[in-house]
Amino acid sequence: MEITNRDKAVLIGLYLSKFDIEGLKNFGFSSFTEAFNTFGYAIGVKPASLKNYRDEFDPLFPNPRKGWHKREIRDYCKSCYHKYKDWQLNTFSEFIKCIVYPHYETQIFAERIFYDHEKIEQTTFAKRLATGQAAEQYFRDVYNKIPIFEDFILEDTTKLGCGFDFKLHSNASDKFLAIEVKGINGSSGNIMLTEKELKIVNYLKDNYYVFVVKNFVDKPEHIYFQDPLNCTLKFEKTESKIIQINYSAKI
Image 1: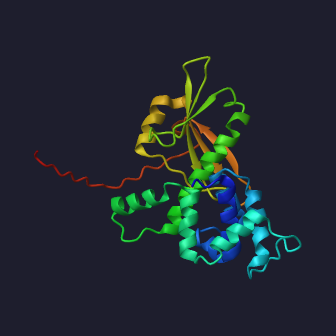
Image 2: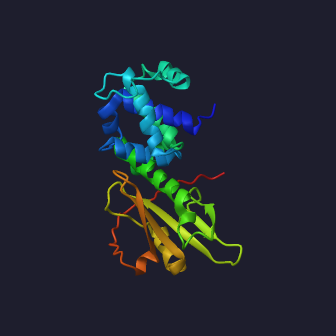
Image 3: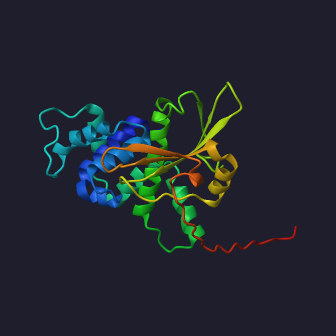
């Protein structure tokens, strides 16, 4: 059965109420505000909704908040509580990762194999995935309110691996804009371009934008850069050697 966005929000609220600070640490969040913002945008609901669900469950758990103790818990929240209240931290955390980022298990599996790590730091990895997804949803929500983008039609290319996340095109011309979205937890930080993205930038130039969503720890906001290799950004090249081994079989 498909889990709706409301179901996801209820489950995240239950998780944050039940495990409190320990739950935050398990995802690498520094505050509930960061968790509400990141999870909220990642699943496509208002961050305030996650806070409301956490507050609704708070009277049922021994945490320092009183929550909504003066009113009865709603039936669908009560049903969720009885179903998941006994789940342990690790099991519940993995479940939250999977509902926030649908391809989490595949991503972590591939990352372990590709990088040959005995153990990936799953806290960092899960937070990175959630932040990236939150930034993408933020862009979907606001792009048509930004004057330079408002007359364009949005095409989602996040799953195509084409060197940018969104294609903005217009019925009035053949011109399109390529948008690569980056997410930063704080008000400042580092962003990275892959070799593929860099080649696309060099080809599209003024028609390529890096759109940065930052400050998930407080109040998300954005900044964008046109032709990122020829603007105020200064990229430093870093190299890592990858040895690719192929195996062939004669048929």
